Length: 257
Image (spheres, helix red, strand yellow):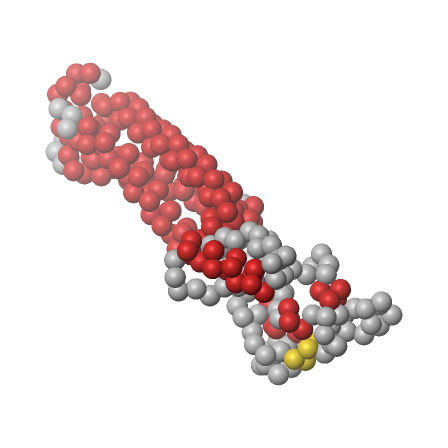
């Protein structure tokens, strides 16, 4: 699809003709014209994290060595031979059948690298999965440190304002309003931190693009879910000191002051 979009933007490529850009003085001769009979979706040729789809042209091996395309024209660093087997049976049971079928055609042909599609995907995603696991562990540790930090700061603030909280309660303030005041103050600080963190994440999103597959580095759903999760965790961390502040005895708070 990438090749069709680049050669025939906005047009139907079926029936159009293309040929290689090999120079006319090449020992292979003038490249023949090839008629496009179909277009397939883009596939990753090197890795799952390719930044952009690579234009690719598929042609049957049966035309190699014929009058139009010599066999040596299909040999080079940008040329690969791929065989596809469509199956309905169990993948592991199919390997022997494929080897026997190839041997029946030519016993000298070797069938190598027989793998299921799942094995190919697992190998392609192994390095990416390992990196993402490390990042997930680092993110979990950072989240835990953030929760502990917020809890510690808010507990310290409540301890420093014990006298003020005692006066508010003695003058008739509802414990719920005192707890809400502490939560709002902690939530405001957490919101500022979340905003700064999201800004840094947006700025570094290009660095993460090579580690992602199927997800945009600036996916709004991911950023929204992350913001909501961090805000909820921060409010929970603020609520524990706030509940302790709301449960203070006014007389004991004033006596401690």
